[in-house]
Length: 237
Image (cartoon, rainbow, N blue to C red):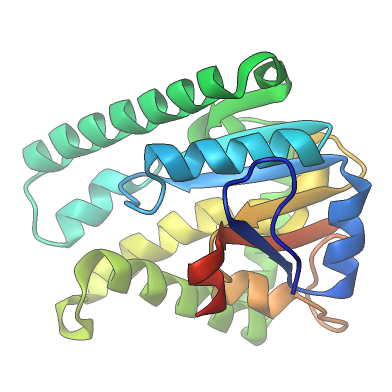
C-alpha cells in the first residue's frame, strides 16, 4: 500500500497493481486518465484532486473521455434512439464542463494536460495498430477474451444494477464499448508516443487485473502501468 498522495492534501490513496507498475509510475513519463461518460464517481472535487496529483507526478498527462457506443448501449437497454441521443449529448457536455473546470483549478500546470474524446484518439494510426493486435488477441487468447467479457458485465451491472436486466443485445453493445477502450489498457505508450505510461483509475478492472504481472500469452506493453487512485477511505475498504 502506498502512503497518502503527496502534494494535494486531498486524502487520496494510490496502489500500483504490481512492482513493475510502481516503477513505471515513479518514472513519471506519462499518465492516462480515462473518464467514462455518466460515471457518477468523477464528481468535480474528485476529478480536481486527481488532476492536481497527476500534475505533481507526471511530465505529461492525457485525459480521455469515452464518447463511443454510448447511444447504442442505451438503445440496447430499452431506450428510444431519440432519448439515447439526447442523453448522450447532455452527458458529454457535462463531462467536458467538469474537465474544463478541474483544469482551471489546476492552474498553470494545466498546460501539460491533453484532453481528447476517445473517438478522436481512435483516428490515430498508433491506436489502429494497437487495435489490430488487441482484436487478434480477443479472437485467439481465451484468457484475454474472458477478461473482456467480465469487464463488459462489470460495466453493464454498474449501469443497470441487476444481471437479469442484461440482454444479449446489451452484452453485444457493451462489448463494442469495452473493445474501443481496450487498446488503451494494452499499449498506451505506443498510442501516445511516450516511453512509459501509467493508467490511473479509481478501481481495478478485469482487464487491468488480467494484465498485471502476466508473463505468458497476450500481454500489455512493457512500459504499461496501472495504478488505482481513489479516496483513502474507499481504498481501504
